[in-house]
Amino acid sequence: MPNMIEVLFHTIFSLLLLFFIPALTIQLLTLINRKSKKLLSFNFGTASQIYLAGIGIVIHECSHLIIAILFGHQITKFKLLVLPHELKTPDPANPDHQALGYVFHSWNERSLYQTIGNAFIGIAPVIGCTASLVVLTKYLNPLLFNWLTGIGKKLSTTYTPSWELISKTLTSFPEIQYSWLNLLCFVLWMLISINITVGGYDLSSADIRGSIRGICLCYLLMGLILFILTYCGFSMVINYWLIKLLIWFVLIMLLTICWSLIANLLIRLTIYLIQKFGDVENH
Image (cartoon, rainbow, N blue to C red; front, side):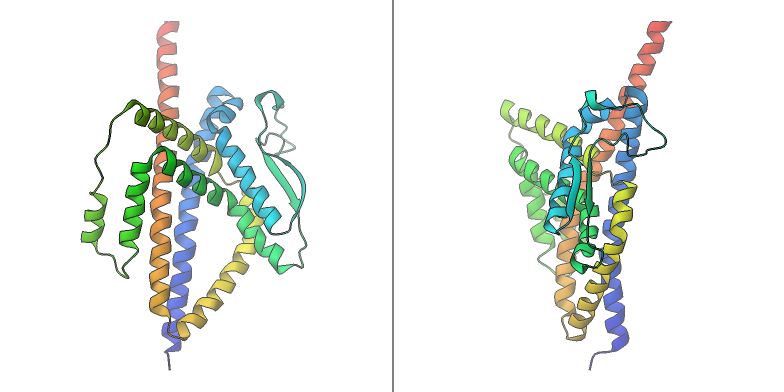
C-alpha cells in the first residue's frame, strides 16, 4: 500500500511546480512590459504604445474574448484596439478610461464551469501571445523553430535530463543560410515578436483579480487528480509529463523574456539618444 505521506508530498511538489514556475514567469513578463509601456507613454505619449505594441494589444484582447466565449460568458462590450485618434484625456476617477483595449463580460457565479473559466480568461493573453509567437517563429524563422523543437524533443524524451545532454543540445545550433529573403523574414519576425511581447504579455490587475477564484478551483481539482493518480502508482508517468510540459513552457518563455528585455533596452536607448542629442542641439 502506498505511503500516504509520500503521495501527499509528491502531489504538493507537483502542484508547486505547476504554480510557481508559470506564476513567476508571467509576473516577470508583466513587470518588464509594463515598465516598457510606461516609458513609452511618459516620453512619447500614450499613442506610442499603440504603434509599438498594437498587434500585441489586439492578440491580448482577442484571447480574453475567445476564451470568455468558450466558457459560456456573456460578452457585454469589447474593443480590440483603441486607435490613436480615439484616445481621450485621462480621467483619474475612471481608471479604465484610458484602456487601449477591453473586453467586458458577465457570468453565472453558480456555474462551476464558468467560474473556472475565469482562471483561463485571466491568463488567456499568455496563451494567445505564446501561440502567436510559436506560429510566427515557425514561418518567419524556421531555423530557430526547428532548433527549439529539437531541444524540446530531446530534453522531454527522458525522465531525468542530464546537464551534459542539456549543454550538448543547446550548442547544436544549425548553420545559418544567408540571403536577402532570410534577412527580411528575420527583421519582420523580430519587429512583430517585440510588438506582440510588449503589448500582449502585460496582464492588468483586473486580469489577475478576476482569475484568482478560478485558479484556486483549478488547483484544487488538479491536486485531487494528482493525488489519486499518485496513489494508484502513476508517479513516474506524472513526473515524465510534468518535466515535458515545463521544459516546453520554459523554452518558449525564455524566448519571450529575451524579447521583453530587448524591447525595454531599445526603448531606454532611444530615450537616452534623443535626450543626449537634444541637449547638444539646444546648446
